Length: 181
Image (tube, rainbow, N blue to C red):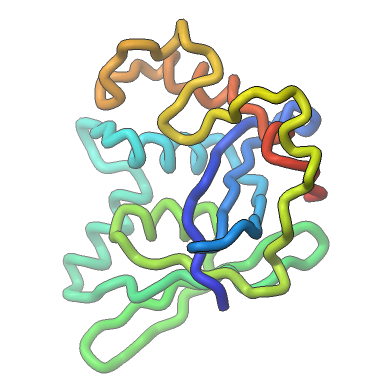
């Protein structure tokens, strides 16, 4: 297993799906995972420190883990079968470690909230395509916007739902390289 970090989040215009791109810590290899809109919004909300009035699902899971006196030791993204990625949460309470089957998108959102490391199977990581910067421009990452008008000058903790949606919709994963889901 190789430790990975959340590198990018964007909208794949070909599939109209969100993509979270993980990058190996201290390396260049990437792991793109296509995820749903709620999970993408949850990841972005956490990374921008946007707090809701009530806890959303990933916040609730965080609260459950902590409330039970446990901790999330790590997340493993283990394999892909027929374009479906698999992951597990490793939760420790006392001397007991429980392995919980989970979707990678949920696992990533929970790991970010608990500052737990994320690991991916070595064979899932790929080198970025050399033509990943064809237009010569910079690729926006998390915290940067492809559409400056929608979030320019805004405090990230005060993004409206429309601004958050515009931010997610304007990110382009094709700027990161050629990936096959």
